[in-house]
Length: 67
Image 1 (cartoon, rainbow, N blue to C red):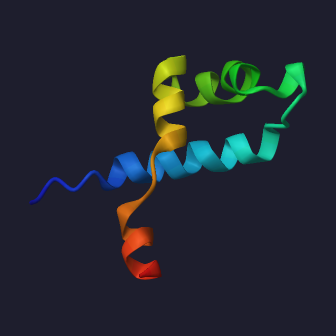
Image 2: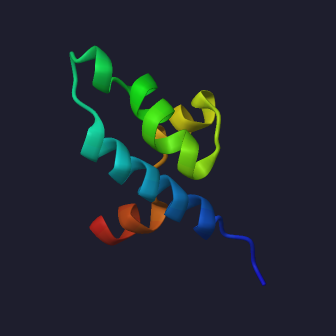
């Protein structure tokens, strides 16, 4: 069985969807740090730096289908 990071990309997409739901620019109570603290950390248990890395992650399967 090949290692293809499919779980990593599913988790990143779930985190990005939760963040899109709660994040509002220019509001201190809905910045990335607060979204991570209130919604992401209790569910996924990841640190803030990992959260930011997941926010930058793009699924390569979606990129290939768009081309």
